[in-house]
Image 1 (cartoon, rainbow, N blue to C red):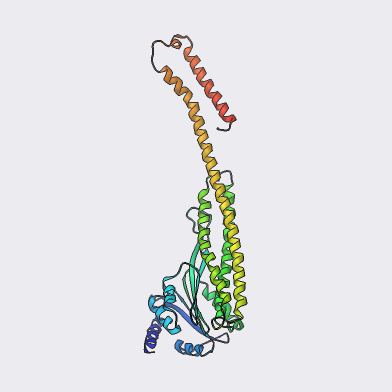
Image 2 (image 1 turned 120 degrees about the vertical axis):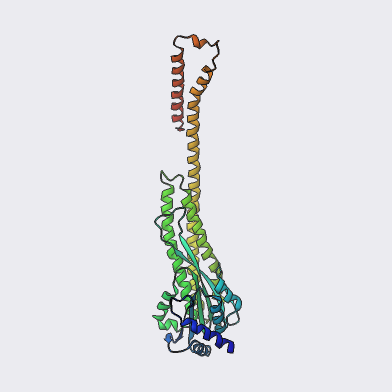
Amino acid sequence: MTDRVTDWETMRRRLAAPVESPARPHVSWQWYVDGVEQRDVDLPDAIARARAGVGFIWCGMRDPDDATMATFAQLFGLHELAAQDAVEGHTRSKLEVFDDSLFMVVSTVDYVEHQSVTAASEIVSTGQIMVFLGPWFVMTSRRGGRAMMNEIRRQLEADPAELAAGSWRVLYRILDHVIDEFNATIAEIERDVEEVETVVFSREGAREVDRAYQLKRELIEFKRCVMPLSQPVQALERLRPPLLPEEATAYFREVADHLVATKESIQAMDEVLRTILQAALARASVADGQDMRKISAIVAILAIPTTLGAVYGMNFDNMPELSAENGYYIVLGVMISTMLLLVLVFRKVRWL
């Protein structure tokens, strides 16, 4: 017990530092009873009351360091491996269930505004939200991505009846908000797909493969964030008390249904983009073939004067044409006529 008090006292001093101080951790916490925030209470006291069944604690942090995470892990009784993931981050969404709590990693995606899709465009940026959830507490930790927890907190605080349902409603709102962001990102990427499709199939867009490839690569990064979330969300449906109340099942089932629709939209867009990329590659190949035809036609035309010049430049004495009165003009006429004939032939077969 002494170690816990010592750790909290050290953390209290760090939290008392000015906001701009690099020594101050990005941590905030609230104690809610019947959906209303309770003030003028210390965190250890609030934890003791929440453990006794009076409301719940909501603690939020961003990019926690080892010392911060160790202190709050001790206060909330978190598993050391889950606490380590919160510090180091985790690249895939997952759900881990412990005796009286769960740990969930939720990958987030944000659409990056840009003028047009280029080979260097960043279209999506990713982050993670780590959620520790128990019957009397919820603790969130954000690494990267857009700040969304304050918005979720304001929405819940505006509806005390929803917040009074318990700590699990925070996790539900986080998942619901993240999936809404997925769908908003899909809508933006669909506009990028339409832009790339227009460029690729335009008359001048035969070689715009890099745009389609860049969009495909960003979509793959998007899929890596969305697809692994299905299994953890489906697992939430099967959890029962004391981890989650019976009423939570319907809410997480709704989240799972929304996620299925999101995945279907991504897969459909992936198919469209794959078709566009294949078409872009085919058009680039056709354009390269047309260039080779033009080059071959020009080489064939220029071979006529080259050949004749080589023959008559050998300086042999016994060449009948050398003594002809109009030999120069005859050879020149034959050369020009043959070249014009080849031009007409190549234009007819559309090599020129």
